[in-house]
Each structure stands twice: as structure tokens, then as C-alpha cells.
Image (cartoon, rainbow, N blue to C red; front, side, top):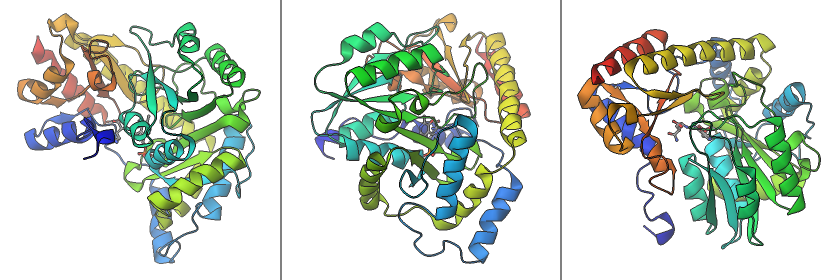
Length: 381
Ligand code: PMP
Ligand code: GLN
């Protein structure tokens, strides 16, 4: 393993899901739904396979049907207009979009300011690009970014701000004021912004606002979305990028040599999914909002300190009330102690003390699974 990948080992999600499989524990660690998305969308994928749509290499930027549907989605929800031919790119999940963006836009030695706790692939992709990650720590209980601290971290080497809203793992959703302040800094310092908005349809308080819609931002922002999250088909690995022509062209250049193209038949199905009526998106959000409350109440009853998320399908908690401090050790022992798997947020911080006692649970699971899990967690007392 080369030095750039030093310490990146196995992702915490794979580690904790393997632990769940090995112990038979309820997996509230890795974020994947235990119920598949809409059946008609699955049928659309089967139809595409049968009709031979996308069974051979599809076009590199993605099939035109999907690129058009992505552009229409950005218009419909955010009033943002993108040319499907030059300003949209289909990727192998948001994960590839993140990797291709970092590899395409960063020079070795460039600095990238990113929130911490961070989604794990950010650290790996920035490292693989030979760039330097500069963390902006989000602190409990609100996890709001300190914008003076952000300003202070910008140096002549800063090339890019890597945003994530709604934020995994804390559930923080950037407000209109925060987005404006961040956009103003990006314009003032001529920075690029890569924004991971895979949980755009899971905002329970307030609304999701893409930073690309703010003045001066469209030409400097790469926005990332994912069908895995929005339509509950995480195994399909269909994601996308919307940005100005030159930025999409740069990201596409990197993508060509990572995967060349993304799997074909699923692209046709996701094109249909993006055109589902508003009722689909509303139900998806209210249903998960209800489950957020179910899990949140259960975790509080079990004795956790719960940081209420405004978005995503994760809840960050603190284990200090149990007299425990080390989230990683706690998560390793949890299946044995009570048959539940969770993820330690401590691995998402550079500063090991910053999130040492934080543990993340996902609520994208059936009601009875969430109920059973929280009943088991009560045994910790
Ligand atoms: N970004 C964030 C913040 C995520 O939580 C995830 C996955 N769960 C991804 C990106 C990756 O998405 P995909 O599965 O589409 O690659
Ligand atoms: N994004 C999901 C999570 O945060 C997992 C995705 C992955 O395992 N890479 O749990």
C-alpha cells in the first residue's frame, strides 16, 4: 500500500457490517435501507435489461434519458437549469463522483477545507489526489459550522471547499445564511465548491438549498446526487454530477479512467425514478421523519444523549451518560453486549478527542427493527 493510503485500511462501514453479519446483531451501522425502493422502478430496470437497453457500454457521460431527467429534477426542485449534454455527468454512485471530482480538480499540495466529522471517502479521495485536507470541526450539540473559523482556514493554497448538506453523520443542514456566507467566501477567494447533497430529499426541518443556486456559485460548484439514497436502491450505484460545462468536462475526464461508464440498465430505471410525482418525495421524507422520531425516542429512553438531526437518515448520540468515553470500543463491544451494531463517529475526525464519545445509528430500517434495537439497547443500563 502506498503512503497516500496509509491508515485508510478497511472502511468503518464494511468493518461494522461484517461485525453485524458475524454476530447476527441488528445493523444500525451502515446506512442502507432494509426495504427496497418503488417497485415500478425495479420493474423499469428489469424492462431495460429485457429490452437490451444498456446491456452494452452506455455512453460515457450517461444515457441521454437519464441526463435529461437529472437536469429536469434540478429545475423542478431548485429552479437550476443545466444542459443535459454538457452540464450533467452520470457516475457509479456518489462515491465515484467524489473521487473523480477530487482527482480532476486538485493539484498535489492543494488544500481542501472539509467539515469534520467527514464522510470517510472524502479523506481517502483527497489523499489519493495528493492534496491536503484541512478540517473544519463541527461541534456538538448543534454541529453548526463556525464561519469565522472557516475564513481563518483559507490560505493561498486553498483550492476547494468540500461541503456536505444534509451532513452525514451529524444530520446538520446548512441554513440559508450559512450558505450565503460560505458562497461569499468562495467568491472572494475564488474557490471551487464540491457539494455532496446525496440526502437532499431527507430534510425534516427547513428546506434543502443547493449552494449552486446562489449568486456567483453556478460556475464554481460541482453538485453531487445519488439514486441510492433518494430511491432506496443503494446497490445500483447510480449517482451524478451537475456543474458548468468546464467543470463537468474535467470530472468526466477523470471518470473515464476510473470506471469508463456506469452500469447501463439501471440508468434507464433511475431516469423514471427522477420523474416520480412530488408525492413520492413527500412520502419518503415524512416516512423517514417519523422513523427519526421513533429511533430518537428509543435512544433517549435507553439513556443516550441524542443530537436531533435536521436531515439524513442518521442520528448521532453521545455515550457519556453510560460512563463510557471510547466510541470505537463501545461499538466493537455492542453486538456482544446487546445485539446491536452502530458506527463510531470518532473515526470521522482527525482530532481523536473531538468525537471520541459519539456513536451514530441509522433509522432507514423497518419500524419493528428500530423498536427491537432500542429495546435491546435498554439493556445497557
Ligand atoms: N456521500 C455521503 C454523505 C454518503 O452518506 C454516501 C453513502 N451512503 C455517499 C456519498 C455515497 O453514495 P453512493 O452510494 O451513491 O456512492
Ligand atoms: N454512506 C453510508 C453510510 O454512511 C454507507 C456507504 C458505504 O458503506 N460506503 O453509512
